[in-house]
Length: 129
Image (cartoon, rainbow, N blue to C red):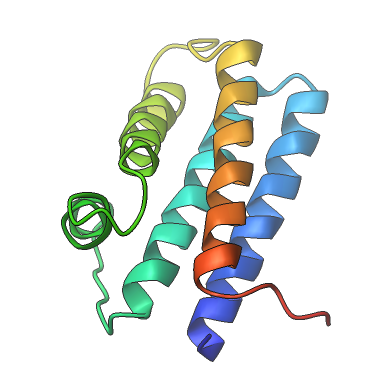
């Protein structure tokens, strides 16, 4: 695991922790957004392992799909999770208030945790601080 990958995995873990706190305090839209960012950081970590980096979210999502989901290197549902999480984040950030339910946010957090487990299996486990 590279230092950049380690940092991205740490960012993902922090985002999951923040998402849980936000959900506990009844902020489902913000919780879903943090869960999306956790998955986004994990996709970046996978791509970093291939020496690929992109500045746009859409490019990261597309490249993750192309290099990992379509090739079967990761189960394709992780790419779908990422796409759905981005759409929900945009709805929560730019849509009307309360467009994201507690259940939707909880699902995104569970998916982010699953994505982190996959990343740790394939990239490496987080190093203790």
